[in-house]
Each structure stands twice: as C-alpha cells, then as structure tokens.
Image (cartoon, rainbow, N blue to C red; front, top):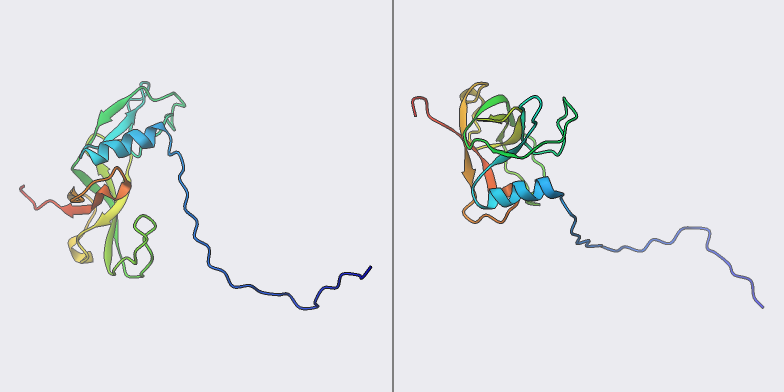
Length: 159
C-alpha cells in the first residue's frame, strides 16, 4: 500500500461563488415594508413614554416595554443632520455604484420620535442644512423594499 503525499505549496483554485438567500425580516420590518409598497410610512408606538419608533422596533429602547401598535408618520420630515458624500461606494440596497456627490441626511419624519437616514436629491452642500423640511421621492414601481423611497427632496420654503 502506498503512502499519501502532499505538495509543499498550497494549491489555489479560482472560483466565483454566487449566493442567493432569503431571510425573515421579522413582523415589524415586514409590516413596515408592506406599508412602503402602499405608499405609507408607519412607526411602532410605546404605550408608556408615547415615543413612535422609525425604523419600527418591537420594544421601546427607553422603557423596555413592548410597543403596542402602529402610528402613521410623515411622509414629510425635518433634516436633523446632513452631509454631502464625495466618495463612491456600492449601494448595498441596489447593488449599484452610487454616483458622487450625493446628499445623505438624518431625517425625523413628522410624528416620529427617532431619525431615519436616507439619500437626498440635493448634492450642493451650501443648499442643505439642519432644520430644512423634506419629503420622500417614491419609486415609480414599489415592491415592499427599503428602496421604495429613492431618497428625499427639499420642500421649498413657503410650500
């Protein structure tokens, strides 16, 4: 019987893998994304402190009490922090390279107690600021995904 021998150097095999998977987002995220498909935005409500969470969550992060239901928020909101990004990257939601520059903001939708972050249509940093009012830009075809809101645009003063 012969003995097995192994090469001294590792053997490399080049291979490209494609992984497709599906995962359960949970009942709060599923409800939230179904609402996006229908053009509505809702957050979860804490019965103790009256906060409305967006993104939705099952338990209040302050009171540790189970949220008791849904409350409509927005669709308009206020910028609470904003920047213009000039470094390109691949958007994890779309898988496409994001053109630069692009605006990116923390937004508190009307009726929500927390912020979401999203893209802004405005790319001139001198035209963006905290306290400015915004509204969502809805995708032409909505599928129940985070990308159903393509970004936010400024609401002109006085409108």
